[in-house]
Every structure is written in C-alpha cells, then in structure tokens.
Length: 384
Image (cartoon, rainbow, N blue to C red; front, top):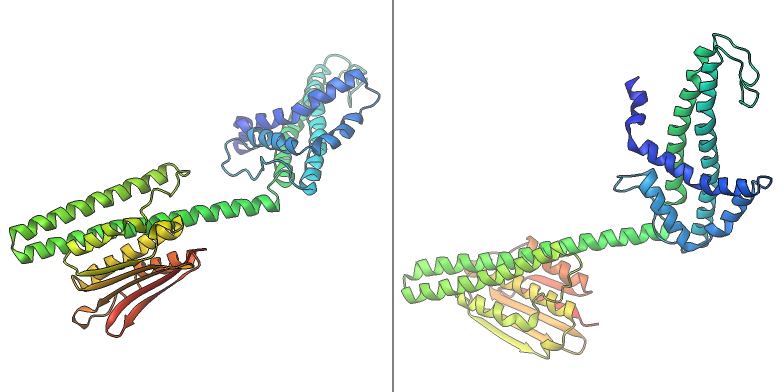
C-alpha cells in the first residue's frame, strides 16, 4: 500500500501534471473565444512545430518538468536541423495537446464526481454531473465516492509517465546529435589519455633524473659534484612542478588551450637535464624547429623527453646521440644509445607505447628496438 502511494510524495508527479496543464491554458482561451471550433489549436501547432527553435523550448520544458533532477534524461535541447526532427516536434505537440486535454478533464471532473457521489447519500445528483446525473439518494454512493479519486490518481501518475516516455521518444537526440555527443565523449577520453601521458612523461622524467643524480652524487663522493647534482635535481623538479600545475589547470578549466605546453624549441632544457645526470649527449638539430606546427612540435618534445628518460632509466649515464631534423614535409627524431652491460632495452613499457601512440595520432610512425648493438628510437612525424 505504501509503495502504491509513494508517487504522491514525489515532486516529479506534480511537475509532470503542471507540464500537462500548460497547453490546456492556451486551449482554454481559444475555447472561450470560439467554442465551436475546438480543432483549430491542433491545426495551429503544425506550423509552430516546424520552427527549429520550438524544439529547444519543448526540450527545456520537458527536462525541467518531466525529468527533473535526471542527469541523462535522453531529451534534446538542440534546435531541429532536419525535417525528421521538425515532424517529430509537431507530433510531440499534438500528443501533448491530447494528453493535456485528458489530464484537464480528469483533474476537473473526477473530484466533482467524487464529491457528488458523497453528497448523493442525502440528496439527488444534479443533471449536469456526468455518469451520476439524475440519480436519487442512496447509501451505496458513499462506497462509490472514493473510486473517482482512485481513478484520478491513476490518471495523473499514468499520464505523467506516458508523457515522459513519449518525450524521450519524440524529443530525444537525433542520429546526428547522438553522433556529435559520441564524438565529444571520444574527444574527452583522448584528452584524458593525453593528460595521463603528459604526467607520465614529465613526472617520470623528473623522478628518473633525480634518482640518477642522487645515485651518482653518492657514488662520486665529491662536494662539487654533489652541488651540481642537487642543482640539476632542483631545476628538473621545478620544471616538473610547472608541468604539473599546467596539467592541473587544464583539468580545472577544460577550455584552456594546449598552446602553453613545451615544444621542441625548449629541447635544450631536456638535453641539459640529461647531461647533468651524467649522460654524454651528442645533439644535432637541423632545420627550422621554431616553424614547426604546434601539435607536431609539442608531441615531438614529449617523445624526445620520454626517449631520454628511458636512456637514463634503463641504460644509465651512457653516451647518447640525439638527431632532430626538420625537412619540408616531416620531422625526424632519432635517439640512440649503447645497451649498458649487454642489457636488454626497455621492452614494451608504457613509455614506448606512449611514443607510438603520439606518433600515430599525428599520422606518423615510431620505431623502437635494438640496432647494431645500440638501442634506437626513430620517429617520423609529417608536417601536414
């Protein structure tokens, strides 16, 4: 019993009833003006529903009154862009008029019938009352009095559920809107993956440099070398904090552009950090790096950062050759280092996977693996 009466305690029941009453107000005005032509409002809503912006208004009303509080109500608030959407809007307006008329009749006459049935115990029923008109007084009417209220309850709750279901069907997103939402969701996932890679590359690089520097300083036993190592750790840590703060800013403000990310113009910072860790880096940059497209230059920087991090992490302070070449149609990155003590390279870790993903995202390719006794990272990124 309590479960059956639960809809009476939900605000949604009454907001849906209000939604059903709204079109009846305009219909009632027309009936006051011209009661002999009740079909005119149903004819008028046809051209009105063809207006693209009407779909927005109906969607907003349906969300606020039919599905209040729902995060994903399945109701569009975009203007109609196709004839199919416009015809669906017209059909929704017609259905809304019909449901509103039924709701108005039920909410007006059923309480009157219930009251009249209760009064029919002691006095005759008036002639203008539907169903019971002209009935003579009888005690059995006391038993029938609650029935119209039960029907009213069922009508109000049922019509509200029906209106919400029809709204999701007729005002739901079109195929184009669902595709656009899917693309937006995909972009969000790609952005999250990109941020995860950024954090892995930046923070992983800083921690690797700090670990290598600390180990080298402890092994050297030289105050001067220790000072240089601490200075390198401090500089790398500051850079990592800047990257972390920028990434957190992107998370806080999703509309923030990515143009503030480091590019290959800042590659000297990476090279100096690797040299400060003890690696002998032979770097050669050919071509106009400062004219690279933003996405290519930013992703190239991260690929170079990950490659140098892998050198320090897996091979240690070994001679490393870095070649950056910019031609008319491509950016070439090559990082090569000997495999220390014959050890294998970094294998298939997330860093190598991230480099390949970055290259593939820009339509390029990345090759990593042993080559003539060395470990080689070779990346080709197209510029257009």
